[in-house]
Length: 147
Image 1 (spheres, helix red, strand yellow):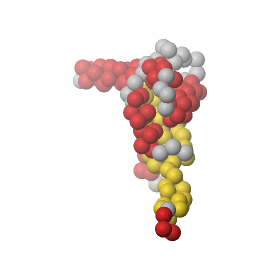
Image 2 (spheres, helix red, strand yellow):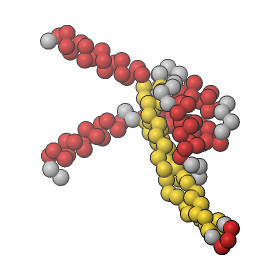
Image 3 (cartoon, one colour):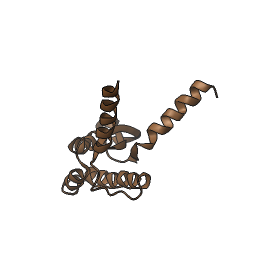
Image 4 (spheres, helix red, strand yellow):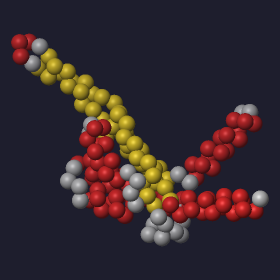
């Protein structure tokens, strides 16, 4: 591997250490239905998002609740000894992409056939920490004032 590739790979590796990601794949729900629930929690604090998902009657809310708990567990693994309540975790990014589509045939009148598309989706949830942003901004400000 060349030096430029090696340096960029190291930078990506360092950036990944501060990302707390959870993925849900091949969910047998249409992406359109999942996006409705995902839009409810985008950009919210983790505690608020969890309470909203618990009280939303849609089926997709239960799956996203479990995914959010998984992302919090991933955060706890990377930040041992810290409490979730002390840090200002929020849903930084949530994306719903279409997954594979099962194609079925439904009998129709006069010997015809209609195609049925059973859709699925993939959900990616990324948590962010508002406290880390403030620390980075403070470092940049102090560097600029020293110059």
